[in-house]
Length: 332
Image (cartoon, rainbow, N blue to C red; front, top):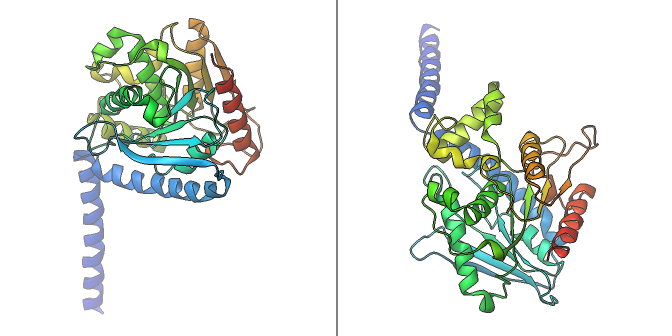
C-alpha cells in the first residue's frame, strides 16, 4: 500500500510540475497559448468550411494559391469569380480573421465562393500569422497583395479601380488599417509602409465583427483579459501592447480620416467584440464617412455570436449576405 501511495504521489507531483512548467513557458513565450488558441479556432473554421460547402454555386470558378510576394511562402491569394459575371461589380478583397494567430484563406474559401456567386470577383488573401510573424507584417503583406492585383488585374479578372476591402475579426482590423495607411502618409510612415495603390482605387469597406479600439481591453478582467493579453502578446511580441507607441496603429479608430471610403459594419448581438464595432461607428459618424450597419437588438434570438455571418444556413447569415450584396452593388 505504501508503495502504491508513493507511486501516486510521484505521479501527482509530475502532473503539478508539468502544469507549472506550462505556466512558466506561457510567461516566457507567447507560443504555448498561441498553439492552443490556434488549434481551437482552426477547428471551428474547418467545421464552418464543411457546413458552407452545400451553398457554393456551381457556376463559381477559382484560381488558388497564387503567389503575390516573391520569396514569401505565406503570401498567396485565391481568386473566385462567377462565370456569369458581367463585370459591373467591384472586386472584393477579403482578409481572413483568426486573432492574427490562426485561420487562413482556405478555411473561408467556400464562404468567399458563395459571395462570388452573386456576380462579383472575390479575392481571399493569406498572410503570415503570429507569433512567427508580428505586427505590422499582415498589413504590409496585404498592401503588396493589392499592388499585385493591380499589376495583374486583366489576367485575374479583377477590377483594380474598384476594390472593396473586406475582412472578419482580426481580418477586419487589417483591412481597415490597410485602407487607413493608403489614405494617410503619416499612418503609413508609422509602420514603415509604402503603399503602391491609391485611395481612388478603393470603393468601399465591409467589416464584420472586427477589432478596432484596443483601449477597450483596459476594462477587461478574468478570462477575457487573459485571452486578449495572450493574443496580443503573440501578435506584438510584447506584454506592453496597450502603452507601447509601436503598436498604437492597431487601434484604427484613432487614425481614420474623412477620406475613409463608404463602409458596411456588422456584428452579432452576443459577440464580445460588439464594443469595437460601436466605437468604429462613432468614429465614422464623427468624421462624416458614409456608412451602413447590420446590427441586432440586444435581445435578438437566437443570440448571434462572433463571426455569425459565416453561418449561411441561418436567417442571420442569409441577411448578412443580402446586405453585403446590396451594399456592394450600391458603390460607385
